[in-house]
Structures are given as structure tokens and as C-alpha cells.
Image 1: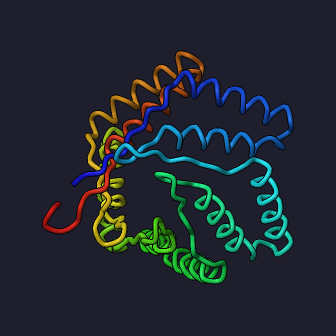
Image 2 (image 1 turned 45 degrees about the horizontal axis):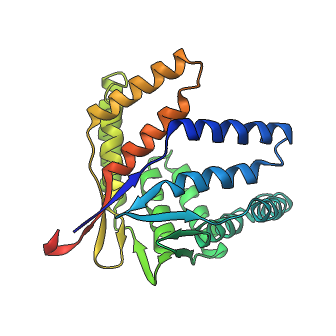
Image 3 (image 1 turned 30 degrees about the horizontal axis):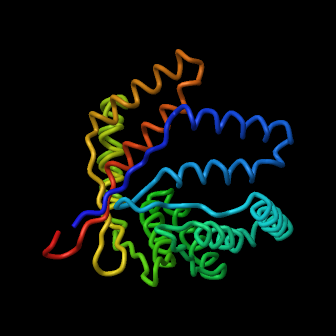
Length: 258
């Protein structure tokens, strides 16, 4: 059993959307930003399906503005200490207003555990001259997924820091040796590893399978046409990338059925 993601957004519609939302945000000196964010997120999720069933985002610009201002002020007042609590509040809002097949997601994390996690992983990353970063990333991803729920079931992330470290080193070296040409293949392998370690409940696991050559073609076409059109083609380029990533991602049955 395979549950496939699909993305149907079109470049022309997306271009019109970001042009209008960008202008309104600039005209209002950034105040309109939350409304612009909501409209763009509604467009992106509204064009995403999994197994033919739709995602939606039901947030409101006014609510997001109030939430952001409150969390930002508390973070500033506490010299950044409140930051993890702010992240949790925003995560709760974003997930609770995101639905799939009419049912909302939920985030059950709390600021205290987020604070301890970020502090501990940050210190270990710094004192190891960032060598520990892959382990920190895995633990943060695991925390985020293990505190995400949908329809009464939790997600999990059984990846290991050591294997992620080896993957990043290998893909990074190949990208450097090839002067960046290998980058699309590296992206595909890293996405494949991360997606392959996403588990929903006990029956479904994430899967990402794509061709680096096709991604390289998309990059070359997108960058060249964006440069020629002074950035206008960027909206179409983004839609092609979203479609590529969605078509490459799915959930598959775990165990013998897979």
C-alpha cells in the first residue's frame, strides 16, 4: 500500500499571489505580513494532497499577528530565554490550524522540554566545533515529530545521529569534489534518509524516491530562466520544485506488506 503526495499548484496563480501579497506587505511596512503568510500557506496546502485527500490551512492573519507580537515581545523582554516557549506556541497554532482530510494535527510539546533540548544540543554542538550537529538535528527532529499527532496517532523518528553524520559527510565531500554538480543527488539522498525515518503510528513509514538527474535539470532550467526573466520565472520554478518533491514523497505500509 502506497499513499502518494501530489501537488497541483500553477506558476501563474502563484506569481499573482506572491506579487499582490508582497506589495501589500511592503505598502503596510510589514504589518500585512501575517495575512500574506496565511494566504500563501493556504494556497500551498490547498494544492497538496495525500492519497487524493486534501490538506488545508485554516489560520487567520489577525490571530497570527497577535500571536507573533506577543511571543516576540516576551522573547525580547526575557533576552531570548522565552524563545523555546514561543516556538512551541507557534507550532501548536500552525498544526492545530492545519488539516488533512478534514481532521486537524496537534502539537503536544511544551516550552520547558523544548528549552532543555535546544540548550543541551546547542552547547554540545558548540563545544564539539559543530561535529555534533547531525546528532543535535536528529534529536530535534525526533522531538518535533514525537510531539506531533494526527487522528489520535503519533509520529516518530528513529534515525540515528551517527548514520546521519556519515551521510552528510559523504554527500558533502562528493558535492565539493564535483564543484557542486553532485548537489542534486546529495539532496535526494538526504531527503530520502530523513523521509525514510518518519513513521506514523505503527503501520505507515515515510518514503522519498527521486532522481538526482531530474532535479539537476529542474535547477538548471529554473536558475537560467529566472535570471533571463529577472526573477519573474521564480514562481514557476518554485511550483515545479514543489511538484517534484511531492511526487517523490509517499507513505508506505511497514512490515511484510511493504
